[in-house]
Length: 87
Image 1 (cartoon, rainbow, N blue to C red):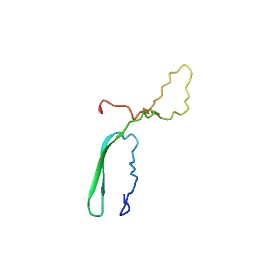
Image 2 (image 1 turned 90 degrees about the vertical axis):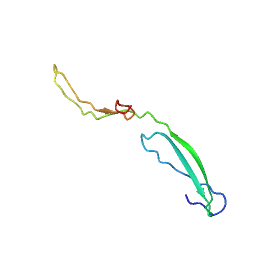
Image 3 (image 1 turned 180 degrees about the horizontal axis):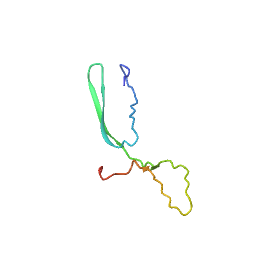
Image 4 (image 1 turned 45 degrees about the horizontal axis):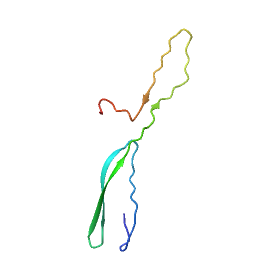
């Protein structure tokens, strides 16, 4: 962020949080003047998780005959599910 050489200034910092990215991070912002003097502030940004809906794969129209069992393979996913390997 580049600001005027003198006087007060305000700026905006934008953090791009990606899908399914959550947790806490400590962020330090530092300013420096033309004589090399600095000041800094540190804050913690906490990104809370959201409950994303599960996804079910497309299911095409199906056909079967009477008196026959019908089986179909289904595929679903949920990014919010914790597997045994993850937790």
